[in-house]
Image 1 (cartoon, rainbow, N blue to C red):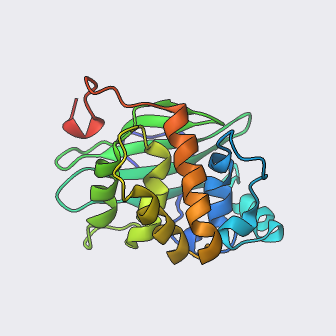
Image 2: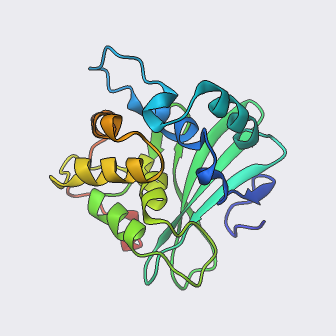
Length: 207
């Protein structure tokens, strides 16, 4: 696979992986630690178990195959998520694709913590809710929202955000009785570790 603007490793399409048990724990569990919860996050919050998580981590973190998750949007920028499985330099890179541009733009990375430029809640929802049916990538709106969730850098959340996030978690397999709590922990962690300066221009503006 070739992503123009990103030439760091052996990229492979990963869009089938979110449907496999263990994926969402690998992707989001570390972001459930909001500092205020005495309870340790566990894969069961996502409807998964440790064996599922371990099995899929071998796929996700394979140095010879770097999974790519394309989240194309109709009539606007989309997101590409790449597992950067460079030995000694593991991380997750986030790129924006712009209509009319041949190359993707890396805007952020996750290496145990977030670095770079992020998106507001409304920008994330717009991307999640407007898949491009003619482009290759993840089309399910719940999975799309969860894939771009680590890019959230917005303290001014819509009051419907927790319910929307909980619904997305339920759709991908999280138990209904834990989805709301899991959503709250995710949002607490993401909004605490980052902030959105009203004078800062979003990467979606093309700046």
